[in-house]
Length: 178
Image 1: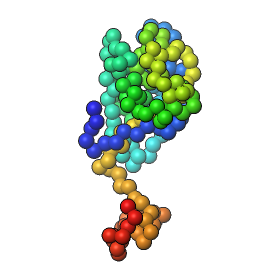
Image 2 (image 1 turned 180 degrees about the vertical axis):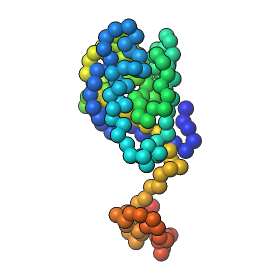
Image 3 (image 1 turned 60 degrees about the horizontal axis):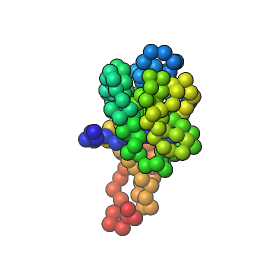
Image 4 (image 1 turned 60 degrees about the vertical axis):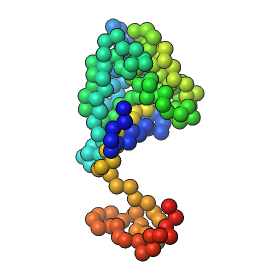
C-alpha cells in the first residue's frame, strides 16, 4: 500500500547479478538468501542518503505463494529491497524490460524456484531455479519530506551552487516555462 510522503523508486537497470540461493530446504525464501546478502552489500550510502530513505518491512510467511509476496521470515528496516510479483506486475512491461532477467523476492511454483522478470519484461510467477544467475534490480522508498528538488530554469538560480541560502526569488515567476 502506498505510504504518505514517500515515493517508491526502482533501479533503471540491474545493478549486480547473483543466484537467488543455494539449493536446499526453503531455498526460495528471500530472508537469509544469497540474494538478500548481495542487496545488503550494495547499500553503501552516506548518512544524508540514508536519512532520505524510508526503511521498509518486507512481510514473510509460511506457505507463501508468489501472489502473496514473500516466503520465510520477515525482513525489517530494509533500505533497498526487491519487488514481489504483485509490485512488479504494476510496473509497465516496457519498464520491466531491461534486456536481462532479474529476481523478485516471491517464491516460485516449487521449493527450488523463485519468481523473476524475464529478459523481455514478463513477470514469471512460476519462477526459475534458485541457482540461476540473474540481475538484481532493487527498489527503495524516498522520504519526500527530507528532499528538495531543484530545477535549472532560465532566469532562476543555477543548481551548480552548493551550501546554504543558494535559492533566491526569481524576478518574474509568472513567465517561468513550467
